[in-house]
Length: 523
Image (cartoon, rainbow, N blue to C red; front, side, top):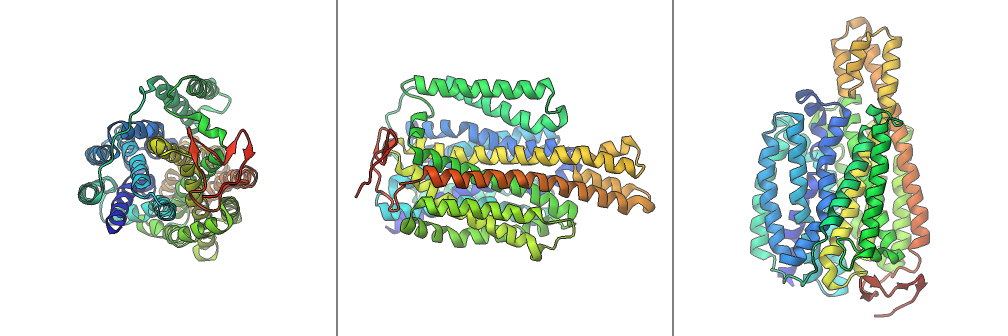
């Protein structure tokens, strides 16, 4: 028993290694914007290059784990992650860094699904498995939340490259822990790899993300934007058709015939859409509007991790008692309420008066969604599908996070780019100068610093007010998405079991629901 819990600790540390990288760069974005001459879209790509490749290859990572053994893929992923971290730290241009971030996402896609698949194989009793999955799910959310804190501390003492150098010692510890306490897993007998499906999914997700991020710059009616969205839709449609048509798909879309599985996956995607998008926005707000340094900005996101850690076990206990439907609906409403509080903020809003309460509500909501919905997903799978199933679960997180940064960041960019030019023109700022300010809020702050004293404060206030207006617009999108998720969960999670292990999966679809008929089961 003790060995299993030590293995869980080692697996969660490996999970933390790759999940921290989702957000550790966020507090470094203003510094990167200055050193690498990056605008808002460039900063979005620094974040999304990682999450996009991560999400796109998670299904492949799950397949390779089933084929060659999850422990082997876990160690391979950590080793590759270490090497590419060195390349990222050594980047001299924006393009080099974006490519390196994509490489990190590739190896993270080997690590993440392996952690959950191994947990599912070593914890077989429903009670212990539920507890282990709850710890794993909490680690994921906590890692994303502490990324800005760790990144901020590093930036206070070192250059932005330190957010990648730190991966090297962390990876060494992870490898040692896995080798010492994590048992090997027997490879499954798997079918032929669906390479065509993989390519279609990458094209679809890649073009969708690209079009959303670049839409504010090209224009939403521009043929490049519309064409990208249309081709993305076609590619994703072909992907879905192929996965339904072939015998051994890379993504078993038939799993989504179980409305509990589909609803839980959708809820996790929405939760991480909100989380990643919020952290991308709030770290820039802290530094560009409130004037906090990198470490202070990161430290002020710490309550998110603390609240998440406290309420994750509470969420699992409530899920056992009342069922995942009620708990996840409350979670989505809490996240929506947290975003609504941001809507009433201004550039003068105090951290302790408003922002900390907003973050606390979001963190509590994430805890109420992540663990219970992860358990619903995994209960719908057979042991042989653990790798692919955990990859589906992980993919929903990363796709949600990728789209959160892309969509909320693009809403902010659209409002900021159009608004700041008009405000600065009213102040008599030359078009050549206001064009620089349109690149990012940090560029706008630098324009204000370089302006004559008579207009410097006016420019700074204008830039900050337009940024906050863009933040409010992005927040309304998040409020709408999370409220819609609450309504969807209230309907589609009806009948989901309150006791873990009550479902007996057959061919990837739980007996809880067969052709929309809910059947009550007893262990």
